[in-house]
Image (cartoon, rainbow, N blue to C red; front, side):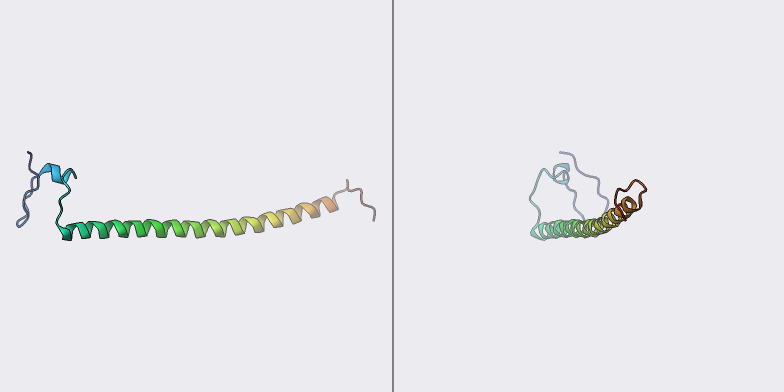
Length: 88
C-alpha cells in the first residue's frame, strides 16, 4: 500500500486508498465538516440559480415591453403608409 508524502508535523500518513475516497470511514467531526461544506456549496448553487431566474424574469418583462412598443410602431407605420386604403 502506497503512503502519501506528508511532512507536516502532527498529521499522520494516510493511505492512497483513503485519499482517493476508496475508504469511507471518516471521523464524525470530519464527516460533519464535509457535509457542512457540501450543504454550503448546494446553498450557493441554489442562490445562483435563483438569481438567474430573477434576471430571466426581468428580461422577459423587458422583452414584452419592447415587443409592445414595436407592435405600436408597426401599427403607426401601417396607418401612415401611402398604400393605406382607408379614406379620410
